[in-house]
Image 1 (cartoon, rainbow, N blue to C red):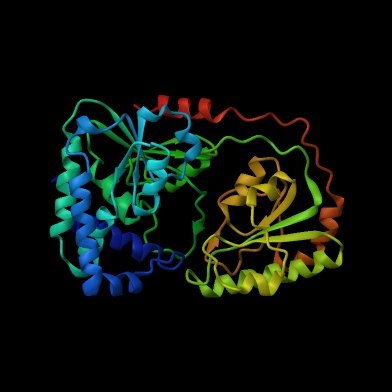
Image 2: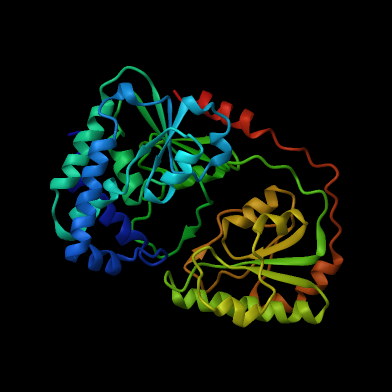
Length: 385
């Protein structure tokens, strides 16, 4: 085997230990399911289904493989015969309907991981790694595009092919990392450090990577976009911070900040909407903002809304798209922004936000439209050595 099951589990435990303060892992729920009779059976069935359906040699692999359907815009740059998608049960019907080539993991890779991680049963993860080792035996070059390499699926794939001569692993950034205060041994554990290459949004993101372990290439935003035509300073969009399961105290604190600003903006006749974090399923948003909840993020940004938040990657995206962004006070949070916003406010100055917005004079006419996604992606892949 290229790497042992125990090494993979150790890597995951180190990552979990490092990021426990800011990221939820649902460890207790996962342990409860995996320990149950039903859970053990389901995981083992998934493993054997993966072993039955998964390619048995590199000759069966396409030139490009994507982990899931997160980057649909990038996939559209390829002919269907030139790429395949690693999928699970949840999107197999979508793949069949679209006649899309796929590698059906069926949850088998993750199932094997769960049995090893929670129960110390490494037998099934060894079987998965042995199958993946068979993909290393060819001469044809394969690009494996991942959106993470720290969770079970991405960690196993990136680790199995880290030293492969024919498979190159590339982690495509789906967000902008925040600097994390008071974090234990963060260096080298951020997403992407386990892959051969990283496609990032901005060159400044290289500070999050151990350059002896990986290489960093700038792609920009991983989708096709155009600059918004006009900023509407009368419309404001709040971007939610995390979920109650991740860090409850910061979660509640963020709502307190937003609630205060919301009140003074409404009193000054601004239109305000709140976009909850994707993992925020609680009722706080409805309690604080009533019907002023945004359901389509990019619809609001493309309307020219002023975007206000803490450390969300959406602030970076919105500014890149031509919006005006405001960063809120991070003093009591465990994070700090690693990118610029157009303006930032301390909590003691929140009451001056309406006057600031009213005074804004924004001209987007001189901004240069970005290169196409096709050109940016071609340039990025051309830099892979």
